[in-house]
Structure formats: C-alpha cells, structure tokens
Image (cartoon, rainbow, N blue to C red; front, side):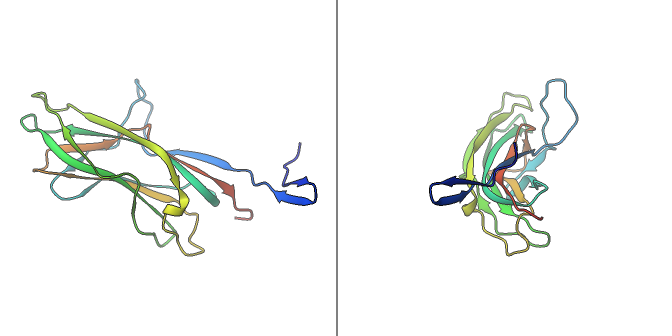
Length: 183
C-alpha cells in the first residue's frame, strides 16, 4: 500500500499528516552490567550550577507538535558529616544554528534534603515525566527553526559545595511531529 496523503469524505478533502516519534536518550555511554549509567558528577554549591546540559536534535526538520520527556536525576551527599539541602529544576530552549531562544522551566523548583547515613554516596533519586506543549517553547526566527532543543538540570545548595548531581541514562526526550518535506 502506498502512502495516503488525503482522505475523501463526501465533498470534503482532508489532508492527513503522518506523525513521526523520535526518541533520544540524554546520557550516552557503554553497555553496563546492570544497564544503569549516569552522567559525570557536577558539584552543587551555593550558586546555581548547571548539573547537566545537552542539545537533542532529531536529525530531521519536523513540524513539532509536542515533546515527551522523562528526566531522572540523582543527588549524592559528598560529605558524610552534613545533610544536604538544595533546590533544583529542569529547563529547555530551542536551539538554532547560530541562535537560541530564552530558557523556560519544564518543572517547578523542587526543594529536597539529601540524606546522610554517616557515609558518602547515599543518593536521592527522582524522575519527572510528561508531555510539553510546543507552544510553550519560545520560537526561533526562520530559518533557524527545527534545529533541536537544549535541556538542562540546574541546582543550588543551601550550604558549601558538598552535593553531587547526575542524570541517569534512562532520561530521554521524544520529538513528535510531521516531517517537513524537502528539508
């Protein structure tokens, strides 16, 4: 069967655009024995730090309809004597070849205590997932559209730098849209 571009119904003709879904994982790495890997550790201190950032580009130009996201972040206490209190949040922006839009928040700002059990390496892990309406991403001027989305995890601790943050390899962004012909 061929690709159907339209459907006739009575005296009306309606075009149907097939949607593509392209999933890209945020953390790259080799195969692990338990399948779990994390990004490199970023030390979180009393000023906002970018724990993780990546430009995800589907590789084709899409008329983007929505983004599906799943982010798993982990914070470790790097000092066994202290309980770590912090806030963190995820942001995104569209990226072009030479420009980018303003950052928007994908999640609220979350506060958490990273526990200590008397030893370092007692992690606290959370996962956020859902759909992001594309209209909430600030647009880029043409011809800069369709070049990808940059996502980042930001964090701030309430005391000296003794927390470490990472992103897990099951974190992903799925682009849902229709291919722009001729690009």
